[in-house]
Amino acid sequence: MELSILTICYLIGSLTFIIGLKMLSHPESARKGNMVAAVGMFIAIFGTIFLYQENGVGLHNYGWIFGALVLGTVVGTLAAKRVKMTAMPELVSLFNGMGGACAALISVIEFGHIAALYSGEHPDQAAPTEGTLLTIFLGLIIGAVSFAGSIIAWGKLNGKIKDFSFKGQQVFNLVLFFATLAVAGYLVLAIDSTNYLLFYGILVAALIYGVLFVLPIGGADMPVVISLLNSFTGVAAACGGFLYDNSVMLTGGILVGAAGTLLTVLMCKAMNRSLTNVLIGSFGGSAAAGGSAAAGSQGTYKEISISDAAVCMSYANKVIIVPGYGLAVAQAQHVCHELEKLLEDKGVDVKYAIHPVAGRMPGHMNVLLAEADVSYDKLIEMEEANDEFKSTDVVLILGANDVVNPAAKTDPASPIYGMPILEVEQAKTVIVNKRSMKPGYAGIENELFFQPKTSMLFGDAKAALQKLVAEIKSL
Amino acid sequence: MEAILNWAQSHIDIIYIVVLSIFLGIEVIGRVPSVLHTPLMSGANAIHGVVIIGAIIVMGKVEPGHYVTLIIGFLAVVLGTLNVVGGFVVTDRMLEMFKKKK
Image 1 (cartoon, rainbow over the protein chains, first blue to last red):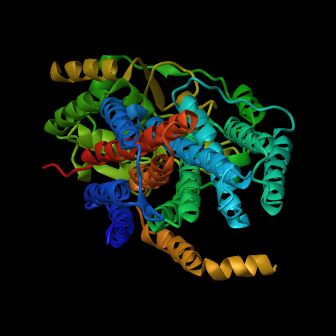
Image 2 (tube, chains in turn cyan, green):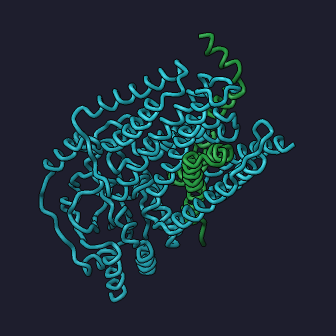
Image 3 (cartoon, chains in turn blue, orange):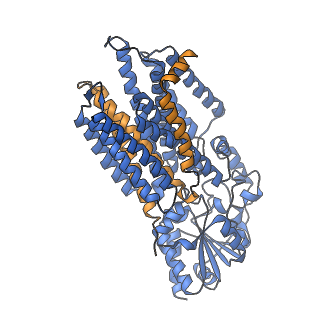
């Protein structure tokens, strides 16, 4: 009876995951979709706790289980509620790492478990099969890679870890990868479930591989990497599903594995790059990036004063604002909206051009501007924006850099070559707000800043916009 | 070879689930607009937190007194919970800002 109710719980869980994912991919239903999946998860988890039985025996250690659930819930909720908008992608990466670690730990315990069985502590039990060992090892390896990689990605996004690569790293990674698989394969085929030394060797090798896999990839590509690691963790969860013959883990894991892989590819497409290019491509080669930065035209740039910028924008017919990471860091979205209203009152047509990968994650700018009450129809996507720049008087760039870098179109040697950009240089005037002349996230120089129609407005985005708003009010 | 066939034979249900889930996973998010890439990634991230069920099962089967295993299991459940709860909450926060405003 209990078991058949649990089966229904798992069925509901699986269905909500499918429906949740479906709803998450449409703007109107996305938030509800998230809720639907969360409810399904809740049912599956509590169904397991109270109804799960093995050989007629239910689970015990409730104190430990609920202690862990409460601790995880409190910490997780606080972390998720308190995190700043700009830090959300790195938090997602961290949570993903937790899931990976969870999968790896399950394998650690299960291996110890069957090692004890096999060594004769329980002579009545049958020996483990290849399939059991295989899923344990896969869960271990994928979980560990995902955990280590996610932690590195987290560190990179918050700037604690710098890009790092050494000569022959690609080869080393491949060798490490296949060696790990070979050892695991050997243990599986030999049905050797007592070799702790090799087991922990595999764990360590997988962790090292995870670190080395992510380290050379540029910070700007981290969302893609996180998405990929996300699908890895999905597969690791599915291994758990195999192990326990658990349908909800299996469907949930595989769904995320498949959807995550497709999402990774879609993200790459939004940047007009291939996955291979991201993983082993040019951002990693710091030499290439450094080279083009050095070769970049270090021409002269001109600055514009707040009052000139204010006049310039107030008497324009059409202004397009290009928000970037600088806006997010400075939390300048509210004052940006204020500027937009002020200019609208003066009869200026104001729009926001949103590059698909502006900021640190796709959709970052939409979220930020929506928070500041900027209405949807003011936001235009890249293709549309590129048609409108020709008829635009002033483009105001707020802390965006790589997404407006013309090198993506003109310089085949540039690491961002081929990425579609906002062609702001077609507008009559370009005002760039940046904190300094330092290059953007991709670490490359931007020749846009040295063009005659471009003028620089240095300073923190929020401070600069506040001054600009005050200046326009007093005009 | 025979081992593989036998294995496939005895796990055919699971193989069906896996294959169908792969197609479903791909189909279901096929037309997602780029704006939603990050929230979708985050939501999917929370869903693979379902691995916590494995951790709970492991934990619930440990015989009392095996403290090392209990501690590892405890850690696994905490990490899994972080993944699930944190994942859903952070996704909700992202999507909260998408709501339409007049």
